[in-house]
Image 1 (cartoon, rainbow, N blue to C red):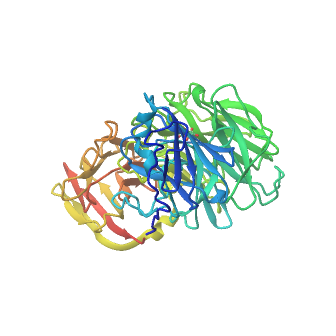
Image 2 (cartoon, helix red, strand yellow):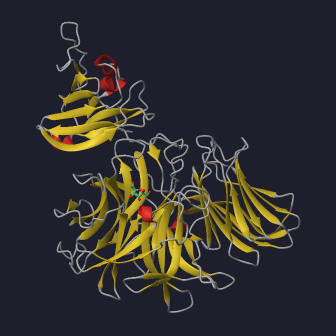
Image 3 (cartoon, rainbow, N blue to C red):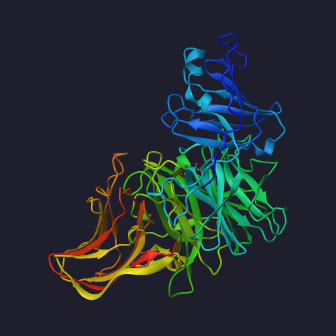
Amino acid sequence: MKSIRNRCLLSAMLIGGLFVPGVAVGANNGVEVSHLGPTNTLVRVTGDDNYILFPVQEVFEDDAKINVLVDGKLEETIYVKLARTKTDYTVPYDLSPYKGKNVVFDIVTNQNRNSVRDAKDDVCWDGMVIVDEFDTTNTETQWRPAYHHTPLYGWMNDPNGMFYKDGVWHLYFQKNPYGSKWQNMTWGHSTSTDLITWEHQPDAIKPDGLGAIFSGSSVLDPQNTAGYGEDAVIALFTSAGTSQMQSLAYSKDNGQTFEVYAGNPIITLDTEARDPNMFWNKETGEWNLILAHALEKEMLIFTSPDLKTWTLQSSFGKGLGAQEGVWECPDLFELVIPGTDQTKWVLISNINPGGPFGGSGVQYFIGDFDGKTFTSDTNPDGTVPTKWLDFGKDNYAVVSWSDAPDGRRPVIGWMSNWQYAADVPTVQFRSANTLPREMELFADADGELHVASVPSPELEKLRGKIVSSAENKNISPKGSHYKLPADGICEIDVTFQAEDNELVTFTIDNPDGEKVVMKYDNKNHTMSFDRRQSGVVDFSDKFPAVTSSPTFEKDGKINLRIFIDRSSVELFGNNGQFVMTNLVFPEKPYSTLNIESKNGTAHLDSLKIYSMNL
Ligand code: FRU
């Protein structure tokens, strides 16, 4: 546990007993506070420790705008929900790069205050302290996942810019360093050698004069096409200022730090476009880029010889697939058709709202790509099918790692939904990513191709002790109970054969009656996931939900791998052919699995419940 040490605690100072606007009136905690008017305050750093803490109150819609001045020059502008009546938590601003310099925060609170006196009473001013360390010990042991990626603290949305190099998986993500709600979009960074355990790294790309750093992608450039060297990592991202533009950054230290290209932006369009995703096309010998033309609900496809100059070649998707929400976070990659030496291309289009159960969702198209144009496969009647990658509510902004080894195409998603992501009952970390999954094609019983999300092979190393097991027995209407590990963190691996029965029901619950109910429907070949009584569900009326997935088989033979990690349940059916990712917030860990059959019997081939090696 790290400690927070207050440097200099000076008492507040009034000049002649009166508050004088424009003059330093409060010198406390290593800062000097000067109120300049109802909405403007200057905070000067007088202490010399590493951080200033900003007190945050989350209820506000509007953020205080803070211009950071270093020796009189504007260093950056950040936005923070400064506390007025109560401090929910504090966020650190790192002063260590400015040791020995004058640091002043010019703060506009923009909260319609009547007088400077009202503004002066805000609790944030006394709460701004200079400290040596910021305590990042996990305080949310009940719900912070044990084997999923989470940010050290604060808000996270889309994973993006992921690449693999020299045995290291790099994961960047949309991060707010100054609060647990969306703002100040920055590329946070984590690395892993096994796709499961993550190390937090310093932020990789920070907002600049062109705007915040929205989602994008990274590639290796072994042929030095961009001119930053054979070992360079090139990132493209959306600069989101007044408008959205595409920009480039490069790294010469394996993605640890990035320099932004001085000639940014590199692509401008006259309507919203974002989340550039690029890849080397080995058949055409040039770079491709797919870009979400968000409001037009289509994807744009570009080519480039050098990652800087891009030529628009085509668009895909106008009027196709799910069209309710904006199209975001595209991806385009080639997969082998199993059992053949042929391939198909998969185009991913994350959309929000308009997902299969409301809010965010991931649709995809299977088709062909000639380096310039993507053409979707069609149904026998010529229409383009709408396909979904996940049949839960909480898997969004799914994109893949570039340069993965062994022909793999691993992806990860943001395990939340824009409908309630900012309201979930965790604060220190606000959101986790899904488990990593491998994209693979499979043909269903009718021969139609779909994309499976196969749990990444690394996950098997997490399997610890078997806490419950069963083999070769009937599943009866009375049901059988199996114990989960005491911490509720586990993988359930179960294979069954539905016979003459209607439903096979899997219920995980705790002694308080909080439960998740998953049902296989043998007639319709669907699986449902009911989290209406899963625990705390009342923070949003969009959260209690039953989601449902086709199972793509016709013979009633099902394998389920169900991963439970404190606040998430991910169900993978038949090696990822159907997937449901759903958040849950139980007050106590789930402790029991109950398996029962309705109207007839089913056969349990095998069941293993693993605790996890953490
Ligand atoms: C998707 C998204 C992206 C954008 C990012 C901003 O969740 O809206 O389109 O780049 O979030 O944080």
